[in-house]
Amino acid sequence: MASTFSWTPIKMSFSGGSGAPMWTLYACGLNPEKFAVTEAAVVHNTYPDPENFPKMIWSTNYTRLACQTIFTFFFAGRDFAPKCIIDGKNIQDYLQDHFVNACAHLAKRINEAGDIENEVVIGWESMNEPNRGLVGWANISTIPSEQKLQKGTSPTAFQAMLTGSGRACEIDSWDFGGMGPYKSGRVLVDPQGETAWLPVDYDESRYSYKRDPGWKLGECIWAQHGVWDPSTDTLLKKDYFKKNPRTGKEISYEEFTNSYYMDYYRKHRDAIRAHHKDSILFCQPPVLEIPPSIKGTKDDDPLMVYAPHYYDGVTLMTKKWNRYWNVDVFGILRGRYLSPAFAIKLGETAIRNCFRDQLSAIKKEGEDYMGNHPCVLTEFEGSAMAGYTLWLYMCENKHSLGDQWNGEDLSIFSLDDLPLPLEANPSTPSESSSSLVDHTTGPNTKKQNSDESTVNPGNLKATLKTPSISSKQTDSPPELTDSPGYRAAEAYVRPSPIATAGKISKLRVSTSEIAFLHFAFMPDKCNVEVSAGKWTISTDDEDGGMIQRLRWWHAEGEHSIKVTGVI
Image (cartoon, rainbow, N blue to C red; front, side):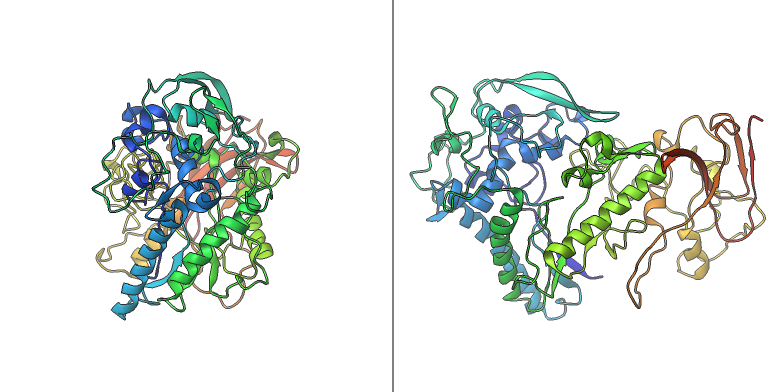
């Protein structure tokens, strides 16, 4: 199995992600023990009531003090934090050099091993989900229009600086409802004098670094750079981060990616290639932002892969699949709608087509800006996205705690769900109260007695078979019950080409579809009987009209279906 290496140097477990060692927070002058009370970061492991940690609030850490500060340090410390000198280096160079050198050292050891490079390890990812921090923010006293995600308390950058320095602030609070995020009120965040910055008397002798005397502990670093006055809590330079201080040029996100991000990317690329000469470099720009404009330049590397990330925000935030509506997030971010209301997609067919179109657009955007490079993201029907990866397999996932990381519940495996069957007909399906059961009857059902310890055509075909739900309609959809089932099997147990001679123009997994009149076959009153397989009824918006469809998944061979309506 080939691998790539990636590490997140900013978002560690105390500031909203995973990757960076704890000492990097101390090196940045931050005190992670005070992140919870100041809301410099909101994370599961330090939340006062971990059992009721808000769903998917961790992603708002991008716009809270800790991540905003450290991302700014990492990419643009020389320009915006010139007083931050440690071991004779600006914090930007200090953090980047340690990260890049760590990756380079691993590349060196892999090269020296002799039998791993290009066989097990084929490439390196630049960084997992980078972010610009505060770089380019035009006014830190307001929420920028491009900040689409708001959940829980949503401080402005200046409010985050104030609460990070122990000041109490009334902050807007947001929630995620049936039609997306909405402002739910205001909340008083009162750290009661506690600060997110290391105290003046903090003993740093345990670490080998030496902080420059011009970088004072116990005080907000942005106050030290004249952004605000801690004696009066007055904002002095609301546009401090708006322009590049060397050039005077305003820094849009696109400008950030083409300058600050690409400067880092080149450093990382060159350090890896010094040891892994023909390494594939997986370039991952900031999430859902326009990729770097490098087509036809010397950065247009033939051994580069475009590795963007994509999120279905509605499903991620609500932690369940919504077959009734979703949103064209990519289209909104690219300004394709006069109002976000026009980006709403109704019905499962429209939703799936929307996902396909978004992923196709992401791939096309990569070609337009970066050149002709492979795009590795995921596979969605019809998007022609040739490369995909799975996120994730977590061997200790449970329904109550999910992946045990900030409330995420994305694992394709869970201890509380059934494993995929190795036989076509599980011998004791009745042992579980699951709403997902495997039919053992029907004209084409055959008992499989093959050895489960070996892979053969029989049990391989059985494993790839889509699990079935009861042919009797239930009051609650399976995904809304607590019964164990085959966890997300329909999403990842599906046919896909391993290799193709030519270019894939379209890839789709088909089902049997039956369209019928709603008034004659009302979903809550009609009865469906099938010989085998799984079925669902949905109402889809297609070409301006509402179409009611019955979808039926089944194995090869002859099968029967009977639908009885109210007429």
